[in-house]
Image 1 (cartoon, rainbow, N blue to C red):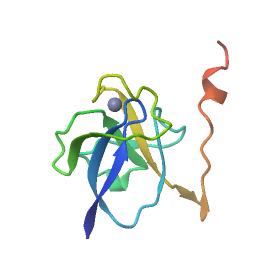
Image 2 (spheres, rainbow, N blue to C red):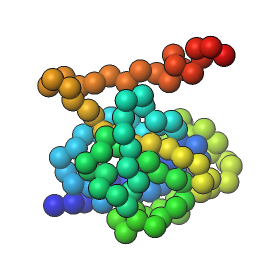
Image 3 (cartoon, protein in one colour):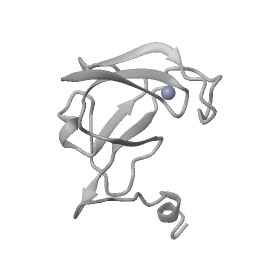
Image 4 (cartoon, helix red, strand yellow):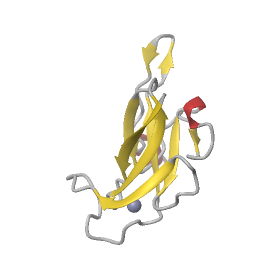
Length: 115
Ligand SMILES: [Zn+2]
């Protein structure tokens, strides 16, 4: 059975609801993809992927609803900017390798190399 779960855009706080099967554990919602994770669009079979790639405010997928509300969480980057903002963000599921949850590597440790 699926049920709606809500997340918010880390850029502007726009709230989105998506129909989820119950068995995948969420790891995080981030403004960038985690290294090693593979993402699917909300209208693809994302339960088969490692996470979901959202574009803020786009709602072509039948199971996706932008509620028109905004989160007031402290970690929203731009709580008073335009919303929805049209930027990318990523829901990552917990991944397992050899029975152990895989830790993500912070992107900053990658992107600073060679700059
Ligand atoms: Zn947004």
